[in-house]
Length: 82
Image (cartoon, rainbow, N blue to C red; front, side, top):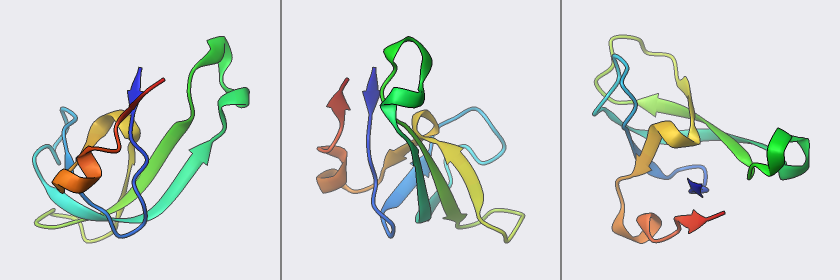
C-alpha cells in the first residue's frame, strides 16, 4: 500500500472520481489515525482538509490520502511503501 504524508500548506491535486477531480488546492489540516487502530495491519490513515481552487463551494473539503496527489515534484518524492 502506498501513502504520502503531506504537510499543512502543501499543494495537491484531487485524483478521486468525484465532482472535484482535477482541482488543485492547499492542505489546511492533516488528521492521521495511527497504524495500531487500523484492522488487518493497515498503515496510517491520513485525511486532509483541502482549500480547493475553482470549486463551486467555498468551504474546505476533507479527502482521504488515496484521493489526492502532490502537485510539487519535491513532495511527490515523499511517497512510501507500507
